[in-house]
Length: 350
Ligand SMILES: [Fe+2]
Image 1: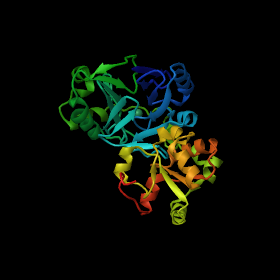
Image 2: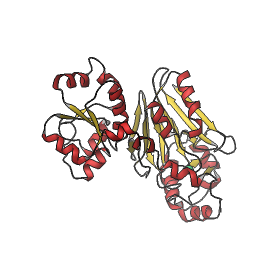
Image 3: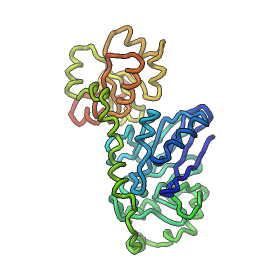
Image 4: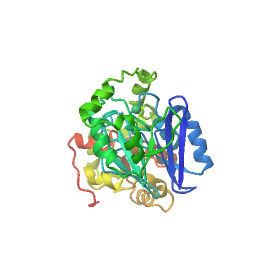
């Protein structure tokens, strides 16, 4: 197993890189924009393919590396369902898993520091973001934070985990790197309260200054999809829901669903679409691959779609570079499709 805890000295952020083997798939948690070159070098040195990049929440103290890593590696960006970030490939909810090769992280929705804060449980380790720090907790005074939500997340969710679970925080300002649930329960001064009211009083008495990067970081972190929405190749090959529905009638088009099985089960699929998960796209389009064979045999053009239009935009670039010319992608993805009231069918039929 490969596990790296990487540090950004400007924002005191910890970034985590996980993979099950050299040469395999990798996942990164809370990457920092200014450190992306370092991550890319490390990925190369360890011979890893970055397939997912995840933020625990929308950060106020640094600009996220999600957008840059996606643009360089075409990885899937992941955030929680409660995020308001403009373009994220995949949104996960409490109880979901984030999966890469031989690694599965369980998602815990833990609002409080912000209303889009999530923790991730991986075997005996918990990536806590700013929900729980070593001998501290995340502030709750901006970005829809709530001391009462934080109390609930800490006492009803996080501290219900076994004592031996390791705590990997999103920041540390003292140089600590790891703790445990038992250690924090016993020694974290913020957790020595007996009620939500007492916790709220404690937090409201902190009178903290705003993070110095806040006015820059939050707007930047809410618009990570910008590079995709202005790329001329992508813009010219983006179809609306209305365009896509019109093309169905001619029966010369095939919808390709790039999402993962869980996402398909939640929302259903576009009727008759073919499932080609984004991470399996390369093998599907090479000579002898299923998608390659179908296109050659039927001559149909393809409309790629995913959850929100990010994976399909990246896949569009890959297909164009591989010589597929009759291909477009559905702007806004399945979210746009369902909000327009367009037809769906349960996954498993096609
Ligand atoms: Fe934060």
